[in-house]
Length: 255
Image (tube, rainbow, N blue to C red; front, top):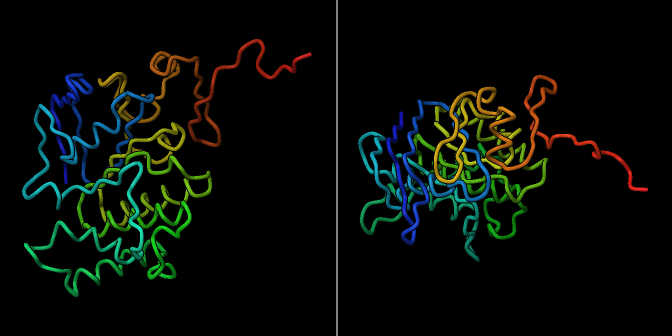
């Protein structure tokens, strides 16, 4: 499923947080949204998901946004006393009729995504008892149980160590390649963004600064200006790595 946003804008408490955002997403594509803190990344995802009101046009297709877009927030609420399988079943809420409980089909879908995310051994455990990486996989499972064609991820690995970061992003990448799901992910780590995303959209102060493939967008002068610190971009084993620019005193020991 394609997504097309034109001239998207958001105002919060009379402040213009996003303005003039043009964005498109092809079926099966991963778009990485990058930029410094306060650039508008989370606001953009919330606007696309319908959580925040916006100006401009957004074309997603027919049907409700709740059955087409799943949002994985940066700090998801993990309810006390709820098991993993119950939490994943919350993803079926958009498909339930008025006053209708989950069906056998809903439970089957939840069981399938729990299996795909390798969470079977945790299915009956409280979701709050999971480790960071396990909890993030449960959140992804809930989003996948919604069976949408567009998955929005807001800093999905911000609270994880390096091993769990790679695990969660690899799972999402594997699933989108298998199922043709489209992904828009706000990403803090520029190296991970370059590794997983087909295209990057760089935001700065609520506007788009650059759009293109990772090599086009991760340009040292542009990044240094947007992030307000000297940065260099290196190739390491065929992958892009963004590092602070070395200065005359970098690496020297203090006497």
